Amino acid sequence: MRNVKGYKFNHKRVYRIYRELELNLRIKPRRRIKRDKHEALSVPSKINQTWSMDFMSDSLTDDRSIRAFNVVDDYNLEGP
Image (cartoon, rainbow, N blue to C red):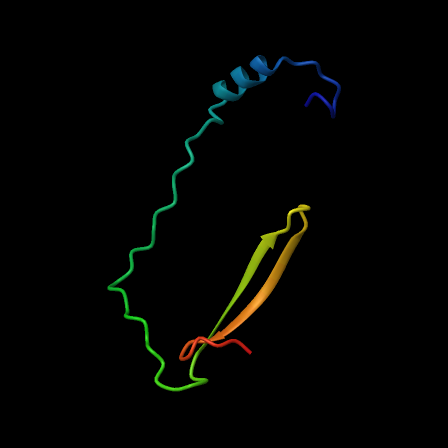
């Protein structure tokens, strides 16, 4: 209001009007989704059955950042 129409309201007055209009409603926290039992992770039985991928980031001493894309075979934990 202060910048658009040029009104010079005090922040305390704005807050008081805000409270009188009951705009200060409580924000309800989100509820967690209830899951069933956890499934056990499958263990691969041969090479190239499952792969995992991930982005990793790090920063150098001169504050530059490096991002790397990692792909790993889950059976023998080797990356291409």
